[in-house]
Amino acid sequence: MSYPTRVTVTEVGPRDGLQIEPVFVPTATKIRLINDLIAAGVRSFEATSFVSPRAVPQLRDAAEVIAGLDRSTGAKILALVPNPKGAELAAKAGVDGVVIVVSASESHNRSNLNRSVADSLAGFKDIVDIARGAGVDVHGAIATSFGCPFEGDVPLASVYRIADRFAELGIQVIGVCDTTGMATPLQVSRVCTAMQARYPGKTWDLHFHNTRGLGLANVLAGLQAGVGHYDSSLGGLGGCPFAPGATGNICTEDLVHMLHEMDIETGIDLGKLVEAAHSLERTIGRVLPGQVMKAGPRLTLHACDAVARAVG
Amino acid sequence: MSYPTRVTVTEVGPRDGLQIEPVFVPTATKIRLINDLIAAGVRSFEATSFVSPRAVPQLRDAAEVIAGLDRSTGAKILALVPNPKGAELAAKAGVDGVVIVVSASESHNRSNLNRSVADSLAGFKDIVDIARGAGVDVHGAIATSFGCPFEGDVPLASVYRIADRFAELGIQVIGVCDTTGMATPLQVSRVCTAMQARYPGKTWDLHFHNTRGLGLANVLAGLQAGVGHYDSSLGGLGGCPFAPGATGNICTEDLVHMLHEMDIETGIDLGKLVEAAHSLERTIGRVLPGQVMKAGPRLTLHACDAVARAVG
Image (cartoon, rainbow over all chains, first blue to last red):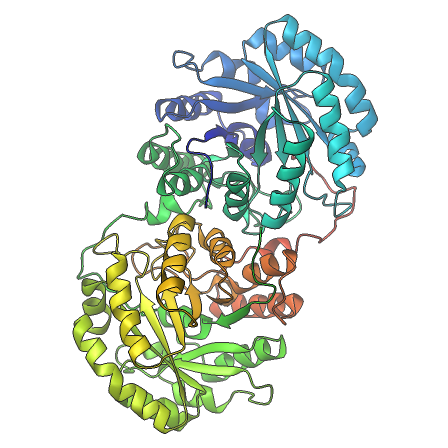
């Protein structure tokens, strides 16, 4: 079994997790959450979105959040932007990079961004120009790369269409996103191999949701394909807009636990992550789906007089 | 990515799941659960334990459960037995096979079975003789093969010591069990490869718990090592005696969903499994950890006018 010896984890909970929570998390709490994770060694964040406050009121404090972050460690602070105005605001707020996103499936892009895939692709040039003009990096993300909740399977050609455009725009980091948890390990293996062959030299970032329990199995398939960048959400914060009770993003501390136990470095202190996850759970006021925060890392030892009735 | 094209799933929820539930599930409900799963195409069960009713009161109705099962499909009905008396009772009840279990770690065996590993190994001959004398098959299971909650890492030599004894006794099916969810994919790969080399021709059955979120990633590693038999529990029924709120066995329908989506046959109807999981959830009276029962299979499509705010 071969895979990278070092992995970069991008914490997306403050964006992908909080945007779907029913409550507005206070700005100071968001800032403390991210700064605690920076202190734990996380060095990449999707910290917020510069989107319409009407569309995503939970993230209406994007600029204030960015202003409060500890920039001393060089942790890369990214924000999602849907349009040139968002890019301007993000650059003004002082992000290191913006993430531009489009879905590989037409209906999801229309539902999510209220425009066609062609219009999204046509609009990226202005965003990229604004960002780069301000010295801000641009990452590209391809939503519904492994399936669309409206259309089902998504042809690889639809993913290529977007990656082609990202490549034309000179974007180096491309996120391949399993937006609603439809990826399987076999598919991850096939898609990663195909993308690496078609776009040599790019940096791939895999974004998995654990909606159907396959999140970390998909990470394993990604690792085996040689991919070294993964998105995750502290505590597994978030959910799925289509299935009440289903989980969303893969859980950061469960991911880091798996990586460390496979001798893969992340630079992250797992104990501090778990503390931050418990703190986040108190903030959100409900049990988060993270597993290591409940069971502890695998070498958490117990006293032998504990009641142990599990016999198999 | 290569792996078996067909997998045998052994449903262990009626034994490994129910034994840790605080409530006694009525005998008729247990029988209906197993018979519903037989109707769904499951062909292997750890249906109950013939253990002391004082030790595991939840399974005190073992013989009645066996008596109520549909045997017309040839589904293999196994029961766990800790001693010769259990083997006699299981054989009399009409099981197809008994499972004998011992932990690879001394302290877990003492805590779980109240005897040393050496005493467990010495006692197996009588159990095997009773079972075979009654025409009943014997499977061997090695608990804490991937780690012990009291001792931590378990040396492979301790696992070999038990497998050696099983091999001496002519046991064909050997379960390698991650009793408290400590296995990682790297470890699964290493242990499976080592066991297959040392004991050629044996049938390996992997028993994973999802305690730290790694259950299906470990299955993927097992599949890649060529292992074609897995234990799981409907709905993820069960838990972990050491961590309140943590999950136990991997979930049957999540496992079957993953296998089918990787073009691996199981002979099982996923829709019927999910129905049975919902029924089980009503019986148990709490939300089960299964994910596919909440989100549906990956190609569950939604109307495009659904609110979709997840943008990445």
